[in-house]
Length: 170
Image (cartoon, rainbow, N blue to C red):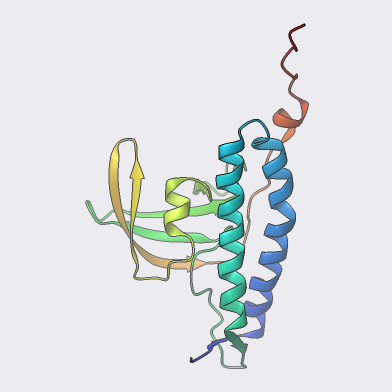
C-alpha cells in the first residue's frame, strides 16, 4: 500500500487536531448530551469513528520535504468550499464543534454533528456528498479545503452547565 506523503507541518497539524478533538469531546458529551442516552451514544460513536479514521490515515502517512502541505480532506475547524449541484451556487462553510456559536468572519458554520458537517468530513475534493435535511436532499461537490486558520469553535457550554436542574418529585 502506497503511503500518503505529507509535509511536516500538515502531519503535525493533523496529529495536534486529533489530540484537540479528544480533549474537547468529553465536556461536550457530558454537558450537552447527559440527559439523552441515545444522542450521547450516537455522538460518542461519531467522535470515536472520526478520530479513529484520522489516526488510521496518519499511520499510513509519511513525512516528506516535498509532501502535501494541504489537508487532503475536511476536518473539524476547516473551511470547505462546495458547489450546490442543483443551482451551481458556491458556498463556503466552517465545520465546527456543536454549539460553537457563530464564526466571527461571517462564514456559514456547520456543526460536525449536523447533516452538512457529517457529509463533508473526511471526503476529499471532488467528492459528491448528499446532505439529508427536513426540506429534502441536497447534493454538493467539495471544491476546496482550507486549514490556514483552523478553528474548531469554542462550544458555549455555560447554559448547559449552569441551567437549573429539574425539580425532583417527592
